[in-house]
Image 1 (tube, rainbow, N blue to C red):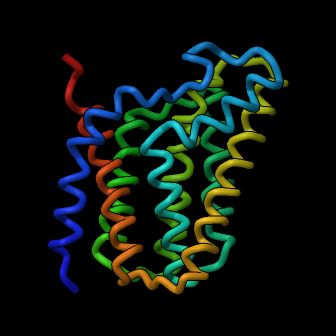
Image 2: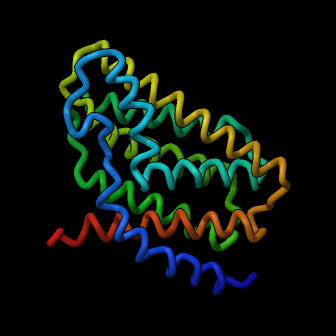
Amino acid sequence: MKLFPNCRTSLLAIPALLIATPAWAHHVMGGRLPSTFLEGLLSGLGHPVLGPEHLGFLIAVAVVVGACGLSLALPALFIVAMAMGVSAHVAGFALPAAEIVVALSTLLAGCLIMAGRMLPTAAWGALFAVAGFFHGYAFGESIYGAETAPLAAYLIGLVAVQSALAVGIALFVRRVGGRVSAPIPRLAGAAVFGMGFAVLIGQLVPAV
């Protein structure tokens, strides 16, 4: 399998992502803590979509499940771990370098898909569970300190939007018959790799 076309694709995508990333808000409420059920719900629905590293990893989960013909329980595993990560942050559990781990998980998942790697189901499950917890912990930052109603709504929104996207994309990939070594899944992996790389650089290099 030739990796060079996909590597070129990811490298070409990186500059655009680096430019675009600062404009992608991670907080639907503009950084303000949600104070109502509706605000919490909107924040939960928008947060995974507006964060490129979160959206990238979610796409990776869906592509892997669809292309490898894996059980739809794997996206559920990711989402349950994500909810646990949110709960840990809200409870005050300290998890250092969470944002860097989130970016690295997206980069790793994209790299594996881009390379057309077929890992055992248990390995994918472990990656999804660990990454899900860290992604959830990162999500918890925008709801930390909120009242019970907006917090519950935020979790509902997170679970709903990620479940719909993960299952929908996985079923689409499965329907079109794309294997993990096929060009389309590998190009999707290149895009995910670019997202993870761009966000990782943003985390490691201080803004000027």
